[in-house]
Image 1 (tube, helix red, strand yellow):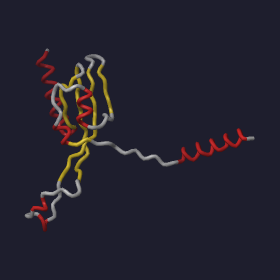
Image 2: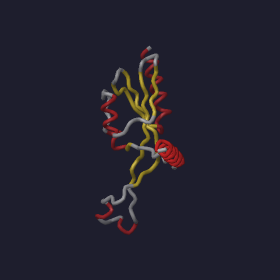
Image 3: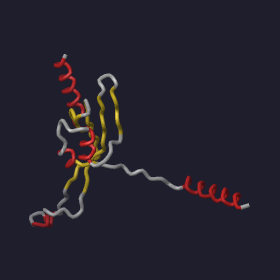
Image 4: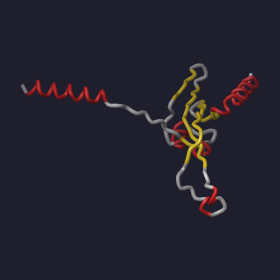
Length: 136
């Protein structure tokens, strides 16, 4: 009898937990952390510097390189017109965030080879293609 009660209780708890609403919160790094990246860092150093794990990893088996991707936001400072010329305008009370963008980090031989943001992707791709052409 006790086993039947435990099984029913487990089924009820499972049913309730599966009905619960799940919310996915996107994690972001910021431009401040991106500025701290330097070519030659190890993959672990890049992850530690950016403060969060990448949300996507692409692996190229041909040249054994990786592309790691992060979401990032740019901070901005909004100043009220009344305090524009006062010292209070310098103090950031409530940080605000602008566009959400994507950071691409290329890892070759376990080290940071290059990185670029989504907004610079088109110009970066053409530069990388030129680099490949020059290496041939």
